[in-house]
Structure formats: C-alpha cells, structure tokens
Image (cartoon, rainbow, N blue to C red; front, side, top):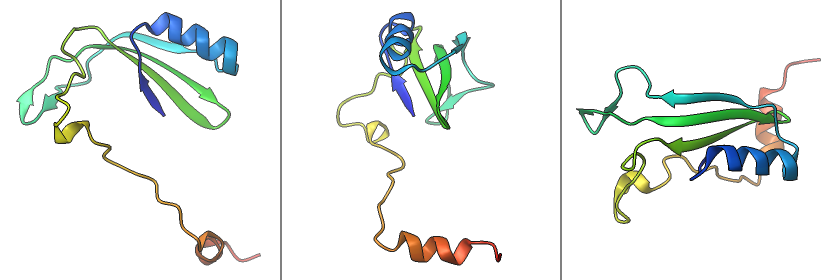
Length: 101
C-alpha cells in the first residue's frame, strides 16, 4: 500500500510509533529510469520510504518537487487503476487452485 505524505520523516515516525511498522528503507531522490508520463519525459522526483507490516509492503511517498503527483480533480489519472473486488465464492475458487495432497 502506498501513501503520499507531506513530511516523510514525520509519517515514518507516526507509522513506527502508532502501528509498530519498521525499520524503514529510504530513497531520498527516486526518479525511476527514463520515466515517461502521458507519452512525455517526466522529471518527477520523490522521496520514498518502504517497510513491512507483517507481509504487507508499506510505501510512503513525498514529492520533492511542488508539481510531482499533482493532478486535476477531474483528471482520469487520479482515479484508482486497480480495485480489489470481493467474491462470495472464494473458497470454491481457492479449492480449484489447491495442490493435491
């Protein structure tokens, strides 16, 4: 799960003290390799902190530039790309994937 935060260090402290998440791995300037946004080269630069809460990866993202990760309210890119869907037949579907004993 990823969260965009205004203050990376403060968010890390809060996650650690309230939810016992940590230790953290921090990249102060992450740009990716040859980043592209909507077909154009991107100059996005973020500070990124990563940790685990059990088996779940937690990422905290702080934009290093004012314009990074800022989208218009009506922008389609601001909408979730993936949405988990609950199913009532999980046991049935999991049973199909189970390895034989």
